Image 1 (cartoon, helix red, strand yellow):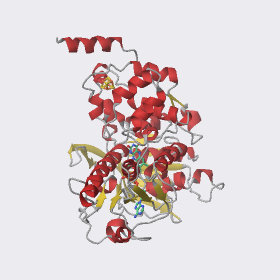
Image 2 (cartoon, protein in one colour):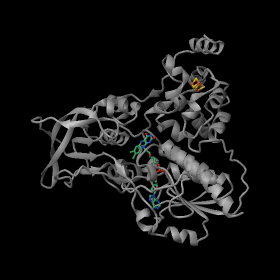
Image 3 (cartoon, protein in one colour):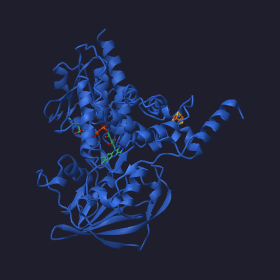
Length: 473
Ligand code: FAD
Ligand code: SF4
């Protein structure tokens, strides 16, 4: 064994047990929309950070789409330099308190942590959240000094892709305006992900940091209707980044899907999260739910919908999924949380039609499935089992089987090229077929993750900067 391998082995054997994050107890948390995961204390964070062996080739850094210097910030936490740790993260990531909560770290930086081979990877996400929250609580107001060039750049959409591109372009000296169709900034972070996973205050505070960089966010501006892309260029914006996301609900196309009581996940979650329907009548928007609900699908969107239904007082909530748990696309932690809260997992089951009474859903006919060979998605293909039909009584259904690209901007922009799914096509630099118009995030890749959208926003910011420097020479 080489000396360096021996050193790693000996360091690993000294590293203590992984610290688990504290959570609200399941019986309590299903009665409120407060955050489930309670974060690490200072002692816990220092102890977890002390497990990191600071390996030289730090694979975790390349496992992170925005390439945070993970060993550096973890070492700062270990040495109780919490504000410095947050500042170090912010050099690469403008939304650390968000990412620390919702990033699928188990598939990214933590997946490749050297310590994983020995058992438990460092809890990089929990530590990122700890440092970011510490800086927020201690009101770290440090904002980098920026010399503005006066060159105007527009960003369409204020999701993680748009916010990241805007922040990085502002840091590079551009005068950036973000145009958002909703009344709140944050995209899915705000209208999709419930407060018990990502408190609204955290989003507002991270957005306010981006405003402090000089980014102007104009809400209630639907680009393609209020003003067109050509209109933005006419207004003097020299380049535009579109991060308009994948918010178009998908349906199954089975009989009676338009009955009352059947929601798309998009409508249901927007009512609950953006419009605060769980606080009706304090807020104007209601959401009607019954006593027995089914959520169709098994991604993060499905888990969030099921857990919202429980918190709205629905007694029986089922996840109905046509594959098995191994194929569920949701984050492992969120599947665990959902199960702990008492959601019934009806696996290898697919609805074939809805049954109605007086115009509202009262049941759904389902069929059992078995798994065949992997399909194009790489997951095993579900095959119906003949003669296994059953009827499940439900009075509320949320369809969470995936979202398509928001169609309005491409439809309203002549010359923009899209693929057969409707996603905007871009070249290697993220530029669309319209000169000066760049795009990234879910509108290009299809529904993906927060950090992938942020990575795209970052890469486009670099390419927009290069494009403008070249044009303005
Ligand atoms: P979005 O976040 O969709 O933002 C697009 C923004 O553009 C929106 O605010 C929209 O209103 C605005 N917009 C659209 N068209 C226009 C227009 N014409 N003019 C002006 N504004 C416009 N990912 C994770 O990593 N972890 C999770 O735990 C997770 N959970 C999720 C839970 C739910 C319920 C959902 C729906 C998604 C979840 N995701 C999760 C996926 C993740 O949120 C998305 O991949 C990410 O938000 C995509 O970012 P984006 O910036 O590309 O688009
Ligand atoms: Fe620390 Fe794991 Fe990164 Fe190595 S790979 S530096 S142990 S976090």
